[in-house]
Image 1 (cartoon, helix red, strand yellow):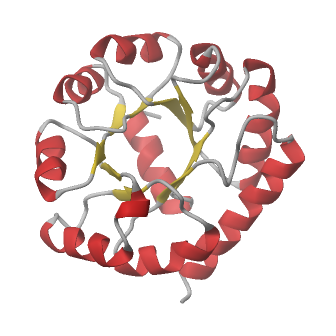
Image 2 (spheres, helix red, strand yellow; image 1 turned 30 degrees about the vertical axis):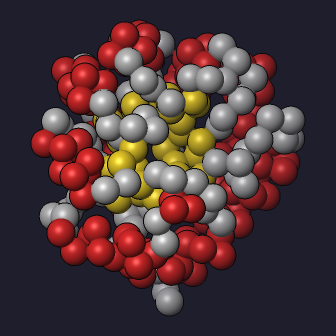
Length: 212
C-alpha cells in the first residue's frame, strides 16, 4: 500500500495522528502496540525526540499497515533521513516549500504546519497532502470554519496543539478532517497502559463527534 493510500484509509477509519514527542526507542514497540490495538494508524515521532530515527524504524517495521513518520521536520535533508529509516510521513510546524517538495519527490505524505490561508494555499500548491493547523490553541473552531470556506472541500485540515477529547466535536463541526494528538495522548514516562487508556478516550470522543 502506498503512503497516500495509507493516509486515505486512515482518514476513513480513524483520522487521528499520534504524536509521540520524547519517545525513547526502548518504548517504541510497546507504545506502538497499544496504539495499534486502539485503532491508530497514523503515528509521528518528532525529530527532537531521543534517537527518533530508531523509533521510526521500529514502528514502521512493527506496523507495516500504518503510516509512520516524523514530526518537527525542518529541512529537506531530514526528509531523506526519515525516508531512509522507513518513514513515510513528514509533519512540520511550518510550511517550508523545500521540505514539502523533498517529501513529494520521495512519494511521502507531507502535512506542513500553517495558520493562515496564504500559508495553506502555498503549501498545497507545493504538493502538500493536507495541512496541519498549528497551533490550534490560537485557532478556535470559528477560525477553522472560516478557513474551510475558502479551501477545496477535499483538503485535509488537521488541527494540532492542545486538542482534548472534549474539544473535538466543536472542531469537527467546524470542518476539521481529523486531529494531531500530543501530550494528552503521550508524554515521556507514560506507561503503555496509560497511553492505551488515553487512546481509547480519544477514539470514543471521535466516534461520538460523528454522531453529534
